[in-house]
Image (cartoon, rainbow, N blue to C red; front, side, top):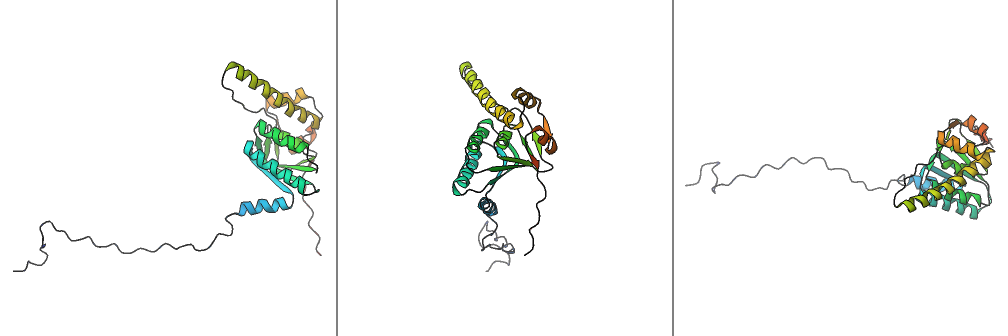
Length: 218
């Protein structure tokens, strides 16, 4: 006799759960984003106009890239270079690396500050042929923060090396501002901050950036 309706044919058998209703299929992207590499394209266009952008913390790797850009532009043409310094901070050795490159450039370099620039990054600005700042820029003289470790002799040698590097930085700042090295050193210890107008009076920059005239219609 056949089993009653709903009676399992085998002991322990359970019917399979119903399949869930199919949901929407996510769209498949088959085109390339034309703006995926917009930063690289933007930097390339700036370099074509002989504009170099230095922004954020400047460490050894960033100093190498910045130096390579400056040297390339110096070798490729005789026109001036515009170096945009945006919210720039720097490790002391990295700043000295870029300062050494700027000191031997054949073409003039116009350093322009926007946002805040502080500490050893001011040495990069000081090595530019022309130095200006946007109206809301901020300039802070400050000592770099360094950590020492190892044996007593290693720490002592490192301290002497840092003192020599600091002297290089402070002598350059004193040279462009016309101030005494001891005054620069004391202002850095106090963390003295300057507005654009005050930076002009201090000697860090020569002028404030102004609105560029619009090109005349043909």
